[in-house]
Length: 381
Image (cartoon, rainbow, N blue to C red; front, side, top):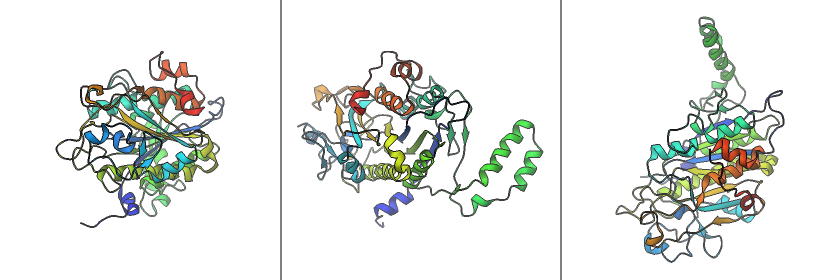
């Protein structure tokens, strides 16, 4: 089986991009101060492999074949997976941070429930028809737009959203619209409106976009850097569910997915340009992985994980954690890393920074938890 180079692997790895939050004259009172982007890591990222707590004596006892030997040292306790070459540079420049032992308050380990809850941000799975970022954009009075065939729950708000699928087919950005217009004329007013949108989008400038994750991130960054561009973007990356042969280094299955995340962050940085200084990027995953490796050199569904934050809105790099320990007595149900930081608080802080909303309003109207702790100063001070 041929071995892919990192560049070839990333080009072959698809992803989905969603843009939202378009300020409209007369509707948006004041444009929010920054932009917020989310990288959704579906399948459950292993935070202990991504950010190994080598200072905990139980790490190597629990997972001998899952901890990278050549990790990058962050401080006297935490390291960073070698796939995060670009992200480590941002940490050195005080434009990135890590939150460890964190997640949403969901402990049932179901992909379907966990993914719904991390996007919906409600009090229980499938309780919401809108997403926490969509509700935040509603509060900031900015409508949404999706650059894929479907709008993810995360971005769905109460107001009308629109979508757009950027093609990778040559000449698809210069289609004739006669057939579309004929179909439009044969439909009702509502149907005609839909086909008119298709006609406009099919001839939109720069509608042909490479589908690899880094290119999508660069495209999103450029769009958000525009004067009246969108305020938010979401990129979805899957295949983090590594029950077998997970690997520890850059060429393991998990390491390859982490490399995609690293390149997405690099793409955002390039695309945003000067707008980088007012940006915040955060990762989101439904749950972590078990502390102990299983019998097939992988990990199973867990609870606590690690989160990556990047962007010019961060001016001092940190590893933010209330470490619970990896001794078996310290684990959740004797198997999982305990989440000691409610990740909804981290999301709320990023919303507060990017959209200029008050924390108490975010806590009550976005996450339905009025007493949600405020962690803003730990991230942005």
